[in-house]
Image (cartoon, rainbow, N blue to C red):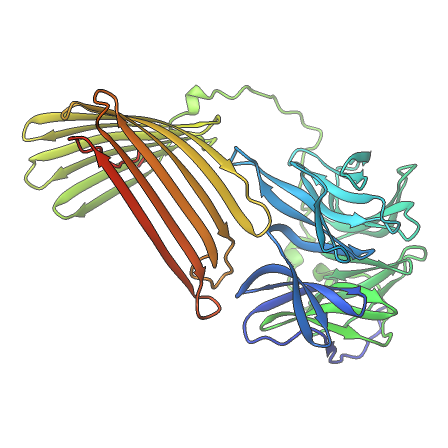
Length: 512
């Protein structure tokens, strides 16, 4: 049975804040600690904390999760990055930041790696590989080359991986096909698996290795706390006994650091004495305070009927192109407006059918427009029929768009090249428009009104096909900068337009 341990207040390491702020992990670096800080006022960044003073080390992009590791004075983590051309594809790439050299290195490109861990000798990297079709463990060299792949033969879902102290095996937190979590060790050479903690109805996360003990956060009771398990004896010890929850443990010189939850987020705490007693694993399902009888009686499985085989059918794209899912009805300024919206199952063909009519029925408009994004580049089209005073006017628009996404780190960087054709029958006007848009912006925090530093530049040239003397150039520049207060910002811009000829070339997008 579990023996009671005393509940105490822990010494706080991180700074106190009046706004919601989360500090996750406390890795030792020289005489200070490195933590991941994320607040309502600021995006995720690595901070150095020393004697209750803190200094920003590196701003981060979009994280796959809040997990990172510091070893041999190098920070390693995974960051989400978009595909250069396909806006529906995102990668999870491994990054390393050398604190001594103040240098950031991209280890992988176009990968699907998560929860990276550096070996103790600093030569290898273990990662969880998950591309949606398979879940395995890859061992990489310092250049991101795959040296070994540990196949997932047990139909597990790997969550975290850590190196043992001798770098000969990996300690893995994983789920089985029934959704239960456990811990195993896997020998690098023989691929032999050993159970460290058996699978059960609890949540295990945020591992840290110290003196052959794996420290982790566990939900064995009503409140999440820090536990450790000895890899040889399999003895489990409860380390913290917080009333409100602890997570993200690290240990240095027998001083245990962790994040404790508060009304303002996670604060870094530490305890400099050893407390903790032998602990017999339980789970929320076994706690009498929780009414989970229905779960105890139910054999819940994430994957059922694993032996059943399903027939594979070829997807009929043409059959599923049209899928009307929404409609809109509106009345404003004496105009009735009706719209039908269609998006196919693959979300690469969007259509809009629209009809509008004024009260006097002097003018009605029918429009169909769409965007096709299955391939690169993207295509769009517009057909509009306007009946005004019994006179018809047809408008046709065709366009092609080449989008590029160079977003990395703290900044979103995008570029688009557009070529559009317009034909207005009533005005007997045909013209081509060539334009480009360049966008650079810093990711905002939750409370930022505008990006504190962004540039949006657009230039567009339009030429009449029949009359070379008719042309137009438009240039627009919009900037934002930091404001007087933390979350304020300034937005300002300039627009220039130069028209030539005797016909007005309308500044109009093909796709509405």
